[in-house]
Length: 96
Image 1: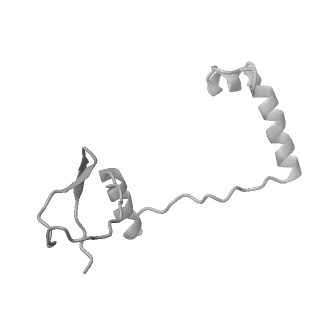
Image 2: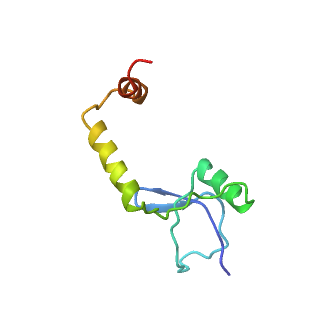
């Protein structure tokens, strides 16, 4: 019968953290699964409850005009590395 146990790997040996229902010399198969962090456990719980939805991974495609605007903006901004976007906007807008 399958049994889930927690072990610690020390000096090349898995050491169970609680007693096992096995006889000495008994052969078993082990599946190793790393323990998940508390953050991962919380996220899994929220997803299971439907309170957290993963972001979509599908990339959207721009039409030709929007892609051209994006490229123009990229070219315009690429030389301004390290400057806050708010300052760039003020410079482009000019004086009121």
